[in-house]
Image (cartoon, rainbow, N blue to C red; front, side, top):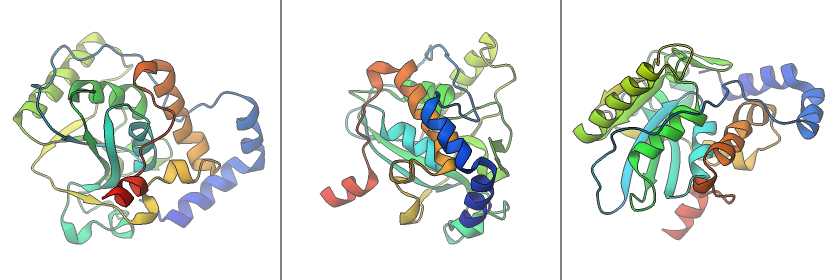
Length: 238
């Protein structure tokens, strides 16, 4: 991953004040357009209590933002998965050789939203699952599309849904999302948490991430909540 300063500097130069002015007067368009897709034909076995899903789909700011606005999600934390604990550091994973992907750990209430519905949102509005080792302006294996499954049930449901979507040809290309098992999740640094909410006018967020949240509201209106569940609020209540 590029360093935070480099990413913001490049995008600011690219977008400029003109882009921000345009954003204010026309609908937002993300680097990855949302796609209306069918729900999974198979879903996870109903379970009691808080459940966990871990998704990687490019820069974690936008993925976190989408799920923070999703009903039934109790907390969504940006972080890293796929590599060792010692390399779960923002500047280190930017090398692209740590095995880590920027990921989001989602704690959710299965009585309000299912694992399959989370997958549908992930594939539909949170990112473009057909891009290999990239999302929008970000490139490298740390931006790969990956589901870090917690158990055999999640793996079975995820495999079946990817096969279902490929067979239905709802995307112009084959899905590039991979499935990884037994990979711990490590929370990212505090300054990455709640980033889309705290920096809505930053060009990267305005161009790439706010449209994803708008698509969630449009495509999944019954699951959209206007007030996001923020990490800082969850931390304060613990």
